[in-house]
Length: 227
Image 1: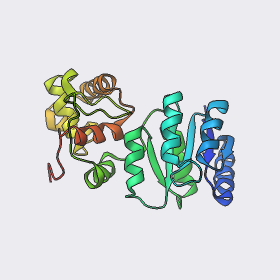
Image 2: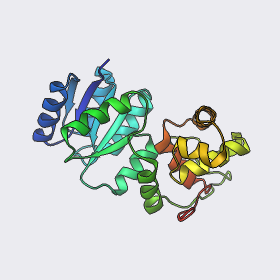
Image 3: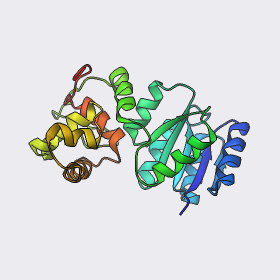
C-alpha cells in the first residue's frame, strides 16, 4: 500500500517537482503547504502517512512544525528537506523525532524509495551518518535541578535498560548495524532485533536515528568512541 504524503516547502517549484515525481510512481500527494503553520494545519486535517518538510520556512520553521505535528500525531513520519547534509537543524530535527532527511537535490528514485522506507517505520539515515551529526552538534549531557535532563521527544533515563541493552545501545550509537551487533556480541540477528525492539519501547524511541542521538546525549557514548 502506497503512503499518502504532505509536501511542505515555501518554494512552489520544489513542491511541484516532488508532487510530479511521487504521483508518477503511484504515491498519493494528499496536500501541500507553503509554510510551517500551514503544514501543521494540513497534517491535522489530512492525516498523511509521511510529511516532506522543508527545514527553513517562513512564519513557522520546519523544525517547530515537526515538533507540533509529532506531538499531535506520533504515527506520522517526517522527512526533513535541507540543502546541507550536516546542518544543525537536521540534528535538532532528529532529536525531535524526525525519521531522517533528504537533500533537496535528491534523485527521483531516492525520493520515492525514501518515502516508502520511512512509511514502513524505519529510519532513513544510516547510523554512521546520524553519528556524524550527533558528534558535531550534540550538547554534552547536563543535569537539571532534578538531577536529570529530558528531551521533549524522548525519555533519556537509561535506568530501565538491562546491562545488555545498554551495551547494544552504545554500539548502535557507534554506528553498528544489527548484523554487526550480532557478530560483535556473538548473538543471532533475531536476538539482536529483540533487544533493539525492547530498547525502543523502554525509551520511547521511534527508530535507530533517535537511538544514536540518545546514546550520545546521555553520555553513554562520547564523540570519538570506537574510532
